[in-house]
Length: 111
Image 1 (cartoon, helix red, strand yellow):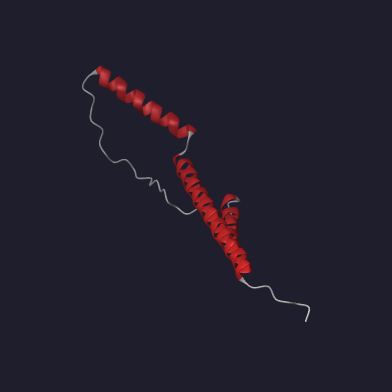
Image 2: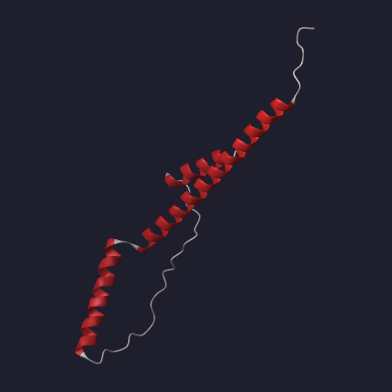
């Protein structure tokens, strides 16, 4: 039952019918910190390069994409562990049934 529920939830999540559990959240806070004024031209150039790199990376990889990818990865790991555990429990059940059959005396069905 755990495998079926896990697979159904995974189907719902990966077809985008339901959001993945939000383990990683990236809040979009406005940066209200006042930037320190650069004293030298080297510091000004360094700040401009840093700002340019942040802008370009923000255009290439949106912030919410990283959070979604991490959440989907965590969900996949959880479902994998769930599936392995359910398989192990099923294996234990099968071995118990086999041992139970060996312990029972055979009945004479001819009478």
